[in-house]
Structure formats: C-alpha cells, structure tokens
Amino acid sequence: MIKPIVSGTAIFTKAATATKEDLPIAYDLLDTLKANQARCVGMAANMIGCNKAIIVVGLGPMLFAMMNPVITKRSGKYETEEGCLSLTGVRKCIRYQQIEVEYQDLNMKKCHRKFEGYIAQIIQHEIDHCHGIVI
Ligand SMILES: [Zn+2]
Image (cartoon, rainbow, N blue to C red; front, side, top):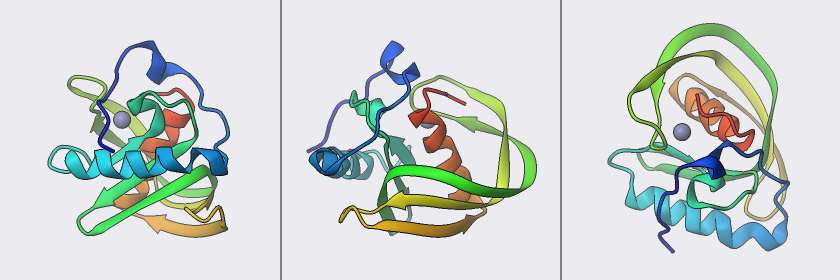
C-alpha cells in the first residue's frame, strides 16, 4: 500500500529492530518508493511513520528491501552533497565508495553483500535514517 511521507520529529528517532511481523511495512515501503521513483531512490520505514529498521532502495529496475541493515565494512571515504525527501535543499556529508552490509531479506534470511558507487551511497543515506540521522 502506498503511504504518505511523514516529516517532523518521527524521522529523527532511532528505529527499533524489525521482525517477521514487520514484513508488511517492507512491502508498503516498496510500494511507496515505486510511487515516488521519479524523485526518490531510497526510503526508510520511519519516512512512512514506522519506527523500524527497514530500508528500500530503487535504482532503475533494481528495487529491493533490507531488514535491519548494518554496515560491517567501509572504504574509500569522500565528501558529497545529498538531498532528502524529508528536507528541503542539499547538505554536505561523508560517504564511502565501497561498503559491506549485513541484513535480512524479505524471507528474514541473513544476507551479506558488497555495494559500491551510487547504490552504496543510497544505502548509507537510508541506514542513517534508521539511526534517526537525516544527512
Ligand atoms: Zn533521506
């Protein structure tokens, strides 16, 4: 189900661990991202008012959800600027070219994947949201 995007204090709250019961949130998040793909490449659950550690990433045809994502390795530090649906304008931030992430997929199966470049940047931005950090 497509959900409205919230702003305000809800998005500055650290997200709780997501469980199997929270899987419907992941599907709502995927639907909401699809509906906003023209202006948005990723979303975290707190942006639709659910305080759980779930993110979705959508880059072209690649659209996937990550439950409880944690960055386990990072390298290739650089400075960049990002925008966010929850803010106006852009802000400077530090990102890493390559990251390794541990997460659970929509079957709650543990996964470990490497990402680099733009998709790694999106994931870092959305994981920050799970910690209540907006850029
Ligand atoms: Zn954002």
